[in-house]
Amino acid sequence: MSVLVVLEARGGKLIRISYETLAAGLQVGQAAGLPVEAILLGQSLQPLAAEASGYSVDKVVTLDHPLLADYTAEGYTLALEQLIRDRRPEYVLFPHTYQVRDYAPKLSARFRTSLVSDVVGIKANGSAITFVRQLFGGKLHADMVGQEKPVFVSVQASVFRAAETSGAGSPIEAFAVAIEPGHILSKPEAPFQQTQRSVDLGTASMIVSVGRGIREKDNLALIESLAQVLGAELAASRPICDNGWLPMERQVGSSGQTVSPKVYFALGISGAIQHLVGMKGSKTIVAINKDESAPIFEAAHYGIVGDLFEVVPALIEELRKAKS
Ligand SMILES: Cc1cc2nc3c(=O)[nH]c(=O)nc-3n(C[C@H](O)[C@H](O)[C@H](O)COP(=O)(O)OP(=O)(O)OC[C@H]3O[C@@H](n4cnc5c(N)ncnc54)[C@H](O)[C@@H]3O)c2cc1C
Image (tube, rainbow, N blue to C red; front, side):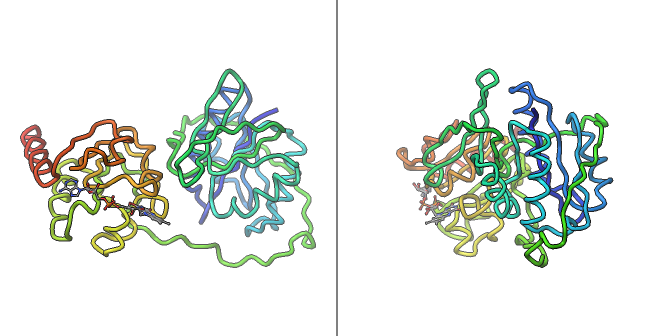
């Protein structure tokens, strides 16, 4: 019995959400009192395995096979099915990526158990683990408990802080998978490329985000000044990006990025559910809005009811004074 964490790599490197999933897996392992094994699939996995072995896992297991060199749903499902039948884990965690969305439902169906997808939280009551996922675009949080084992879980990006290396040097084991060319029915094409982003808001520790309350593009200079004095990344609600006032890659929300900085400033943002869903994992939320009944205040830890054109310049001035 164990917790398996399936890691995903691209271009020979583990992707960031793999480290976050590892952190989630270590949390589950600790709460449930189970060993944690990091799983890698592909070919020539030694460098990745050596890296993964530095992350306080009990073991790194490689599923190394020429037919796994390129991702296919059939290959990955079959290889993981063999490993899971051998290991009999209690929990199998995945990063919630496009790839995982493709094969994890098929894999969980083979075991006739549930896949709790897009998990945003883990609660432990003794060794009983509850997984939290959002419903209705984030309006509700549902606590899910898998009745049958193994419980398959995919973890949303930017929710868990990435695991940090401990230099552990955990043992690496090769698990022999039996796959024949005839098992692979689909022909792999070039992997889906997500839009190249020059900013990764998911890793920002402080974000200053602006909404329609800014009124016009020229006024953004004020918000940029605040971001600059704080050393924060600039972000926005959807209308600002739809207007082309800031690039789409700076949009936060259900159709933008999910962020979880230490501090998130929401300036002139009403707090529509599609925005909240992308930022409510922030550690501290500071909202400035002239409407005291704006929904953003329900999510905010600190709220200023006021005109941002008065509050933000005063804030910048005080911050500059404090710095000098
Ligand atoms: C399918 C779908 C996906 C979506 N995805 C996203 C998404 O990813 N991200 C996103 O943000 N939205 C998204 N939306 C849009 C979302 O529903 C809201 O319309 C949007 O978030 C509103 O942006 P806002 O808060 O900037 O604007 P508004 O809702 O217009 O709010 C502006 C706020 O500014 C305040 N204000 C005005 N003047 C001032 C001032 N001088 N000082 C202080 N406060 C002031 C007002 O009181 C108001 O609360 C999506 C919608 C749909 C249907």
